[in-house]
Length: 388
Ligand SMILES: C[S@@+](CC[C@H](N)C(=O)[O-])C[C@H]1O[C@@H](n2cnc3c(N)ncnc32)[C@H](O)[C@@H]1O
Image (cartoon, rainbow, N blue to C red; front, side):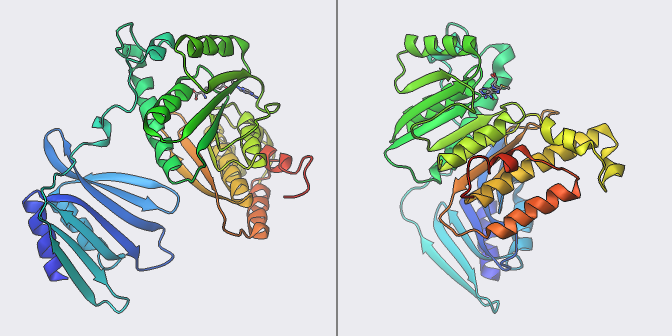
């Protein structure tokens, strides 16, 4: 063990770490599954970016070399039994047995290696702003520069693509991937994902935006035609009435209130492999919560009522996805912007058997506790359908 920490110390002092992973939690109940560490440059200072991977979310923090050493010291072997340290000259693996016996394996590296010091923010742009559709959509100037008042939007778009790419890469698809973006609005995120996947994915992408506003649909389809983009179209339809022929990935970002539920339902009914949504307003559950419950002392304050309504609406959505056989994650979508709209619900269809009775009980208990008589999604799951 001592030898491992000597090597870690040396590699920190000599700036030779490429990456490091802490894995195999000591306790099966540990919510923290693993930790991924990579060096980054922050304002010319060498730092280490830790990604703490929890069961249902990731958390990223940056530490200097000393803090990095202390972090690892705190986590190994108390929390994690395995560490893989990759340096410029050596791969080092520490394995700690259940009885606490450490084994250290070291492998010298002969080939020349380099560390990738790019910070997530500085990563090569995932989206090319010089593509003509960005100008036609109103995000860039004629010569492909992101307009000053669109910089923030553009950053969000890149972040969105990065997240969805990560999620999609963990999902198995056939050669053709049918994606529907429901409540697609002005189409920024739909174009972004289309552009990214067409450039970086080796599968055939079939993209449909579903939008109820005719003016937007006409405008977007005109841009698609002008740019000669294939297998991409906007459809004027309500989410409720949209009938996809195939649906692998359902996306619904900030579709208003219960439109998010309709979208999730569409994904479930069409057996989508992946359901990704960023909920918007939560009026339906909020109205239900205005009735009395044992949490009146909290919810009598408008802002807390609002926040509780958000949590309950989305927690039930996540549970309904679980109930329908989706492994579900709730993650932060974009940076906090004084808006509660920064949550992303991701459901990935799983083969694993699910204890439906337990999940149904969880949903019922949650709704009962907060005096919510009806949750739109949970209620409508049963409409015209007896199999759930
Ligand atoms: C807040 S915008 C979000 C646009 C886009 N997804 C984004 O995140 O940038 C919501 C869009 O959903 C559309 N919408 C709301 N309810 C809908 C429904 N039931 N069916 C289809 N579109 C709907 C609205 O017209 C609006 O353009």
